[in-house]
Length: 156
Image 1 (cartoon, helix red, strand yellow):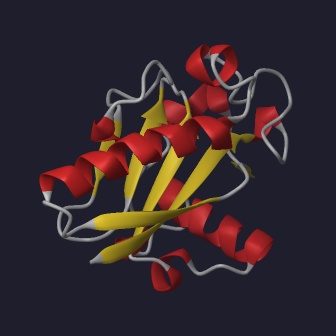
Image 2 (cartoon, rainbow, N blue to C red; image 1 turned 30 degrees about the horizontal axis):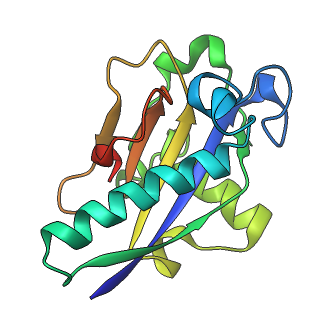
């Protein structure tokens, strides 16, 4: 069947409310192939990923994506590696996922956990993270540390 996914580009407070201050998401392929438009880049990555899923499930699984405009969280890029990543299910108020879901709820009136089957938080690249992606096991939700160097289907 078809599953819904929301993709949420997130940056840190130094990049402004819409992530457009300074470099924001305007680097690597987002810049060179998409003119700085992170939503365009993420749509292409999603299309590659969705084609992969559909092909490998012999047409029995596909996704529809809602890609939100970038949001900024109240945390500094200079200490982004110190930020707890996944804590929503454990009641973590200062975790990246919890802050992002709250920001999306206040800005767009969207309940990420109720309104979609899956959610993907895409952070502006943080050199302090030792991972490219991290996720819950058995629970919807993942975070990608965006390097934007290709259109790899492993995004999903």
